Length: 342
Image 1: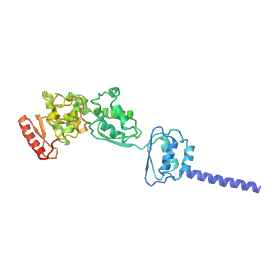
Image 2 (image 1 turned 90 degrees about the horizontal axis):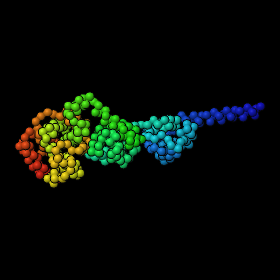
Image 3 (image 1 turned 90 degrees about the vertical axis):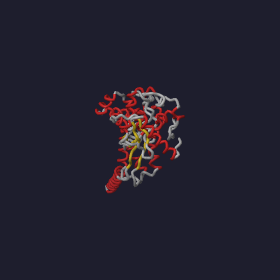
Image 4 (image 1 turned 180 degrees about the vertical axis):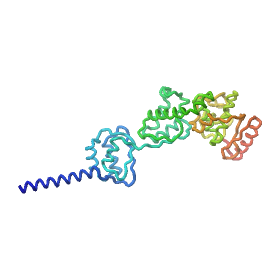
């Protein structure tokens, strides 16, 4: 009897010890990091892949206990939920696995500023989400796909409204475009913008195209409504826009600082010295400020403007060609003094 009691006591002690160890494996902190760790899990990643990264980066204090708890919680799959996850320094195996298994991601912030081309946009996006730049770019160039969104190859860049967006890292290229379409529609659904668009008797694409020209003509928000007014006056009077940035875009050399006669002679549908009206599409991704500047364009009689001498980015506006020529001569003189020849 004493022997049996001894065995039972030993089993109870061992059971208690096992329960204690099991409890610690599940609920006690099991990290070897002192700062939050960003874990990126691409699509089609296995549990074995996760184990390899956590071990190679020395994230966990006890790999064996993590593996055992993962099996207990049925996380040891051939494919686990993808995404970007933040593992905190004091987390237990249960906290880590629960977060990964449930796909509780930490979002990223994607800042998209005004860009020249869709290639530029794709490059920025591809650096922040799982979809690479080539996947994003391929959709920008897929005529059937962009047509389904209501755009043309020449206007698709206006789909993306420059801003900072919160999204998940494992966003696909298709999901990115769906999100941008949602944000685009939301931007243009604003009642004031709808009313202004109707008053202008312009399409969204036309406003974005003109806004892109304004965007490249001045960096000063305060000047943009006045500059938009100049171009609208020209459009209404059937005068060529003669916008230097459109010529630069047509030539394709964005290093040009001084538009010369040889550039003006370059035959391109974007050459507004050569062709009347708006170019086929935006010459860059216009900012909200430039779009709203077109919608809220200043009403005036100015038909011309020219950069003022200096590096402040200001412009001199004129109502007559004679006034404009005086301003242009002063600016050209300054360019020559600064040796800005191209």
